[in-house]
Length: 321
Image 1 (cartoon, rainbow, N blue to C red):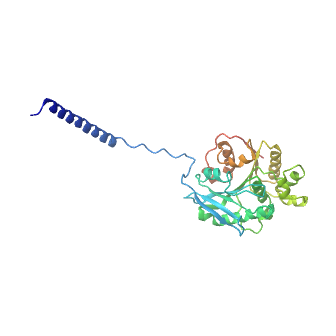
Image 2: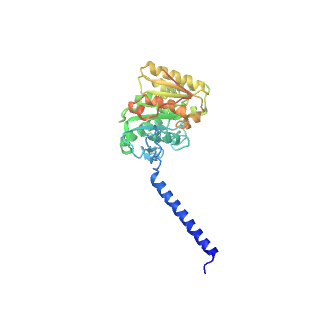
Image 3: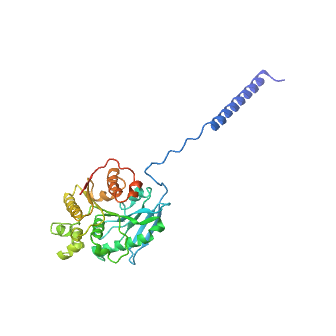
């Protein structure tokens, strides 16, 4: 015979099951009735967040140093190309060294740029003139193959730091160095912290020993590797980045810009409170500094102005000559 206790327990279990069933029904209806949240829109200044397509060690000559790396958006088509030349006192350095390409790739590849970082032969195997010619040949190969990476051979921007800044300024100042090469003119040049825009002036004053290894003691040779001495015709627009911690370098950048403008070219000087190394490493990372460089880039091409984000506050303002 069923006891009162067992009857009560059975009733309690039935009630509990009913409550659970009602709860499941409500959850099911709620799940159907509430629409999933819309995904957040991407930042308006970012074109693609896909990882870059990376092509390493593209040959442009027989020497093991004559190689460059390519970082391209997966969906690139007719993209502008940033071509990076590393520094290192004309004697050392590498295309993949820390601070050379990393933040620049992270900044510009998602915005639809192809970024190329090149090596070139070093002292004592190649003097600065031979190094500049190495870079010119690298640009030729990069332009010839740019379309296969989604790049536009007519929209190259050269960026160099330290010794690399000297070399890109040298190429920009001296058409003779690229004579006979099937080069498409680049849009512009960013020369970051070059200490050798005026080689004779540097060599006549106390200077680092590395300059003696690069330029020797022949004053006639100094003029053949001096961008300001070779500058005789309007060249591609140039932005000269200098550190306010090295005022002599900024004064020489001012003189170079003034001569460029006097010849009918475009030049500006951007003063930044950064160390020599950080002027390279923080480009692409420091928002104000990067925006100031991008402001120069926007003026090179209408499509670049559309492709780059709107500038924010800058840490240093370029003085346009």
